[in-house]
Length: 93
Image 1 (cartoon, rainbow, N blue to C red):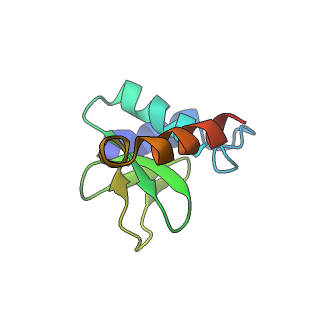
Image 2: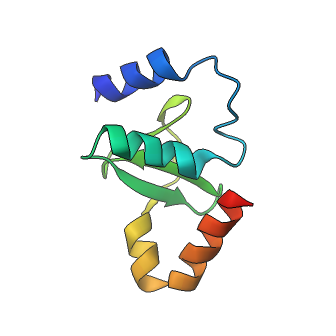
């Protein structure tokens, strides 16, 4: 996972793209495109998307060490497609 952290630090730190300001969903997509073994997760309490594995999660700041347990976004799509669509819509608008 050091390669993910290095990628974030090298390519994204210090940029003025507001990845944690409503664009976290899209940043998670960037990470999953670059590292196909990562999946997109959603943190419902904080309303935040991260990319990761079942035990490690990443956003534009690097490894996300919040205590909140994210939900696999594919699981949300299966269980509640209306909620999933609303989450994606809200990340676009």
